[in-house]
Length: 294
Image (tube, rainbow, N blue to C red):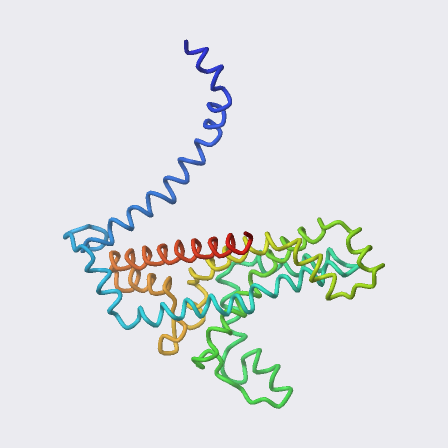
């Protein structure tokens, strides 16, 4: 009987056997912390020791705190600027490298190099680039053009775009290589036929390149939104959320609650809020995309 069962469901048994280690790791590192955070967010705690059930009181107090409003809107500003800067730049770089005939390997390596440098080290490096006064690298460069030194990271209207610019420099290389792989998979005969018909560069991009990478761009778009929505160490290292909460993000607020105030239930509550927002954004995005495809 056992042999007959195994023979009948052999593929299922083998498949589940291969997936089991991944399922266990996913459960231990993803679902268990997620459920623990949701559970903790409903309690008052002393450190990590739960003391009293609070219901939604932690959520109410978090919403009423003035830092939450700033962090909430700033996180959407981070996302907006990342779509303006960080989403477009990798596509442009990939198209440019794809059009180059010589030294493609050199440019691919150069573009990807910032990704292999530890993120914290890169953030500290950019802290020196944005440093106020005559010793900041950006001010030194601009000083050669007669522009006086600026305290860049103290300007509330510029701080988020500056941080997003640094994030783009840090991570655009990996996304560029993904787009480049997709571009190199496009049939060259399509471009040759378009060129023979007299199509301009923009026409080739519009009618061949962009449609071919549309599905990839759609996936990378939502992944970038999810990634940027959880921005943490960049504003932590560069500004610590300043000036006057102009660069504080929801994840940075989680960090402050957890490791400065040691109020883990409120940190967990904000984490749950972030997860809910991302689920809503992903659902709405997928619905819009499906409607446009119909």
